[in-house]
Every structure is written in structure tokens, then in C-alpha cells.
Amino acid sequence: LWSGRQRTVDTYSRVAKDDQWWSIPAVQRRWNRLVTGREDQDHYQWIAERHLPACGLRALSVGCGEGARERKWARTGRFASVLGIDLTPYAIASAQAAAREAGLDGVVQFQVGDLGDPSVLGGQTFDVVIGEHSLHHLSPLRAVLTALRDRLRPGGLFLVDEFVGPSKFQWTDAQLDWINRLLPQLPERLRRRQDGTLKRREYRPSRLYMYVNDPSEAIESAAIVPLLDELFERVELRPYGGTILHMLLSKIGHHFVDGDAEAMDWLERLAAIEDRCLASGELPSDFVVGVWR
Image (cartoon, rainbow, N blue to C red):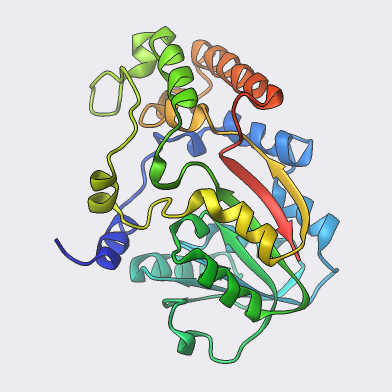
């Protein structure tokens, strides 16, 4: 086995497929509704309008991947600079090319680096730190968040869009029960993976599987919100579910992308069930958007 860091880099150097819930436009509109109250407004513009000064901010984005989120922050017009840091050379090269193509390379910059190495950022401080689907890959989380807090200027903001569900994907009995009751009700054609196999159940992965596949995955995800609340002042927190839909639709999400009428009807029903479970407190939200100071 090669090093844990190298396995993480290898995992995020692969090309993503459109078979996950985040690729589904109707799911993205639902996130918008739950976070901002409007299906046509995402959290970038919503946070910019509610919490960010008019312009001139300097931001650090942690685990930026291929830079799509950083480009969205740049387009809000609030930032003089957004610096994205990531371990993966492939992702950074893609991010740099995309920023140039979009004409945003004057605002958005990217570099390969490990935030555990103090020399990566030198003595730089920032008005905003951004953690989007990256914090759940970082450990030891208390030390990481403390170091990021030290990078924030007084009054600076920590903007978060994160998976905060069970650490190491150790799904709860309650959510697995719901997923495995609902999954067999879907028509078989909507349960076919891209390789043609039929999805019958969702399982709690073994810790060995998680370690071998990607040792960083959800390593301390359940601790993210408690530690942010301890180390920062909470300004706003907006849950957007995923406790059922995330894993129920895993590997079969491609059936729900193109507006197929039967698939959209099923998706609406599944989302309504998740909404009821969240509203009643039967299930917590596995994903949140939040602002801390």
C-alpha cells in the first residue's frame, strides 16, 4: 500500500462521473431552496449579499480541487483575490487553465500545497477563509481549524459548504433503514448503475475499505460543526439534507439528470420523504452551508 496522502491524491485525480446526487439539476435547485429560499439563487450570491462587504476581500480556499467554486466566488464581485490550495497537481493545473479561460486569473490563483506545512502561506492573512467539501477530508481537525482561525483577520469570516454526517461514512441505522426501504420501490431501470448492475441495497462501509480507498474521506466529518461553534462565532447555519438522497442516489444519479418524467416523479417523492424526516427531527441533515466569524 502506498501512503495515505498518495491514495488521497490518486482518488481526486480521477475523472468524476455524473452518477452522484450532486450532478442532478433538480437536486441542486432543492439545495438552493433549502439554503437561500429560492431555487434560482445559489449560496454564493446569497452569502455575498447577506454577509460580505461590497468589494476588495482577500480569501483563502482550502482544498480547492479544480477551482469551480472559487470561480463562483470570484464572480460575486466581492473579492480582490481568491487563493485556492490543494494537494493534487492534476486538479491545480485544471483550475489554473479554467480560470484563464474564464478571464478570472487576475482574481483567482491556485497552488499545490499542504496546509499542514506553515511555509505554504508564509505570513499571509485573509478576510475570508472558504471550506467547501474539503473540511471533511482534513485531520487533526481541531488543529487545522485553529490554524485557519489564525489566518483570519479580526472579524474575518469562515464560509462553509460541507458534508457533516457520520465520520468515515458510518451511516446510522435510521438512515440505512430509510434508504433500504425506499430503494427497492424504485423501478429497476432507475436502479441500474452505469456498469449495468442493479443496485439493491446500501451498506455501511468497513473502516478498512475507507482506509484503503481514501483515508481522508469523512475522517472527522461529524466534528465539523461542533468544532466550528467552539472555535468561532456562528453567524448562520442552513442545513440542506442529503441524509437519504445522498447515498440512495449514489451510482444511479445519472438516471435523474435529463428530466425523465418518471425519474423526476420519483425524485420529488424521495425528496419529500427526506424533508419530512428532517423537519420532524427523525434524521439530522448530513450537509450544511454556514457562516462563522
